[in-house]
Length: 193
Image (cartoon, rainbow, N blue to C red):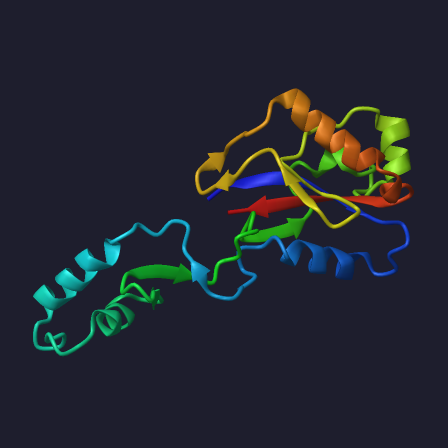
């Protein structure tokens, strides 16, 4: 379980910032179920071992007359299995391939760098003019255009970094200086996986 700081840049012309934020963040949530598709973590042929184990543990429940696909659907909890035209079976999932986190919330232990003394979010213009430098570099940024950028995957036990600190600083700066963000509000977030 990992937590990391993130920024959301809400455009100035948005009348309901939380509605915009909820809709934008939901698209990048693991909880956003999508049409079933092959599981990228699935192991080719893994189903054979599962069927073998099920038939060995419960031969009366899974006789040879029960198809391998039916055994998989019954024996695995919440498993989605699909048999291709070539007869091979593969694990499928409804997890969002664009998922970056499973939960998020406004504010966090890192929020002091982006709030005024009363913990109100600061406007983008004020942040750039007054602070000049971010107190905490975020792990992820939701841009005012509704795009998600992250340093790297947010794993179960930590954060990895796929870009150099300079590259990430450039990405964050570009998001903050994007003309679409002008006059917008920066909201600090806590993302979790």
